[in-house]
Image 1 (cartoon, rainbow, N blue to C red):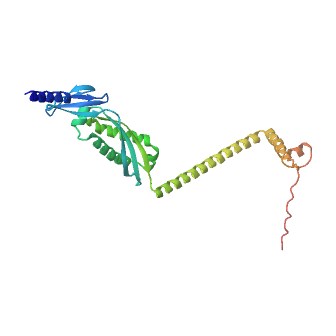
Image 2 (image 1 turned 90 degrees about the vertical axis):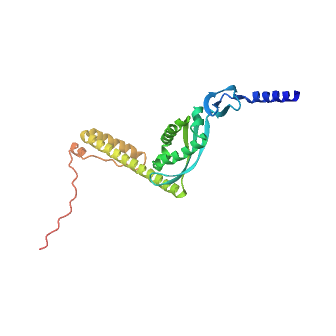
Image 3 (image 1 turned 135 degrees about the horizontal axis):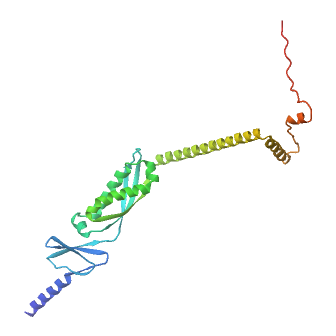
Length: 259
């Protein structure tokens, strides 16, 4: 009799100990009563009646998930491998348990298909230069689909866009050609601006003869610093001022007509 009483007391003590669950600050327990959803408990020490109630523990911390490299064909028919990283957390423990069987696996599969679908609508140049825009686009699509599961997608980051060797060489040639084009355009713009300045200077000298004399003096100063021979350009007006005649250019003799 005493042994049976001790056994009964032991079983009761074990059931009482097993009835308590400890949920940490970042954990919640989804409680089911006879198979039906009852409530969400936590954090702290919570009572879960054995046999009548069952609990499912859910972690509310931010989850970091690597999206495996995906083969993507861009809109301009370039084959690349793209990998990304996904940040998400559970915001509704009830829905994440009831609406989806394995929310981590489901989120991973959805991220892979969404990554291929979104990037396939863009050119290679956009994948390489507009990553922020693509990240936001992928995040909004994932967040819209996972909202029914009680999951919030915090961020999506494209990590790598891997190209084959031939495509890398083609991009390098394209970049070199683009640099040469820009250099030629800049050189042409410089020549055009210089020509405009020369035209403006010529018009100023034509209207103000004193500017031409100043240009003569500047030319003499430049020549004197570079060579011992000095060439002095004299305008024809000086001969008129001094009363002389303008130098006559020698004309070639006319040929006599042969009769």
